Image (tube, rainbow over all chains, first blue to last red; front, side):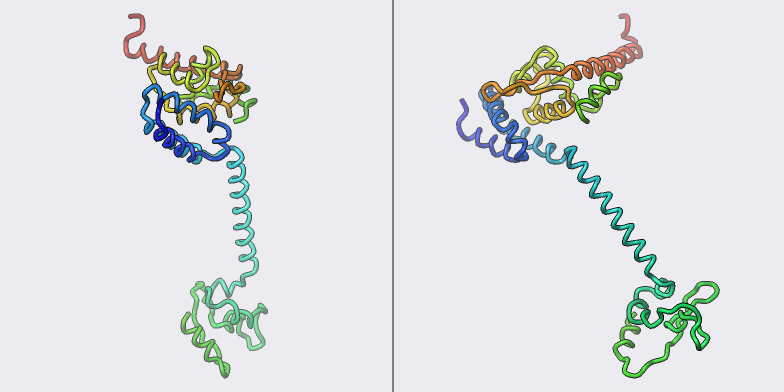
Amino acid sequence: MAGPGPERLVRIALHCYPERWRNRHGEEAAELARLLIRDGTPARSIAWSYVKGAARTRLVPQPHRRLGAAVGALVAVACSLGVSLALLSSSAPANAITGPCSGGARGAGTASRGPAPDGYPYYVRSGTARSSASIPIRVAPKKPANSNAKDRRDQHC
Amino acid sequence: MAPREAERDGAGGQDVLRRAGDASVLILTSLAGGAKHGYALIKDVKGFAGVELGPGTLYGALDRLEGLGLIEALPAEDRRHPYRITPAGVTALRVHLDAIERVRVAGRLRLGLEGI
């Protein structure tokens, strides 16, 4: 009969299994280990076998976990598609041309499309123009008074 | 895979044990000779195959086979659960052994060992 040491080692290894597994097989597995130790099998090799088995049990996805993962993946794909479509539908062509620095406050002033009363298209008034070859051309906008903060942001961009 | 699917696949001649691992085949072969609990399974497999199954490997294979509906647990006897092979398990084992037999014959034929 093995002493408490080897059995304790096996008990520790069995605690690596999920609780559901331990409820189902725990007592039986401990009894099997006790019989194998009695036959002369080293407790360390039994414990190691249980540790490996526990790792496999935790790594192999269960059917209900697999279903949950599939649902989660579908939700993630749907969310990312929705966000992409929302961004595409809400972004103006000027924003796409001038990049992230052109959005927000500066774009807010150029919400209306089409030529302005002064004859320039809306994207020229927003600070950039596009040539016929689709190359962005910077056009210096009119500087309103007291707009130092905005200038700093433009220079930074 | 659900037990019913395993039964259907086994009945249809598909080798459901092909990817189940050697331990699963050894356990099913042992249980084909009668219901056994874990300790008796380990001893029996060592006796007919010379393979010493680790207890962790044993329980992993038992869970997998039970999930496939190829074996079932019987009521516990003194903290030990005996397991027995199901009809679907018998069919799956037969199909797998037939597949192995075809490979064995082809291999021996190509090595020039057949008929000696």
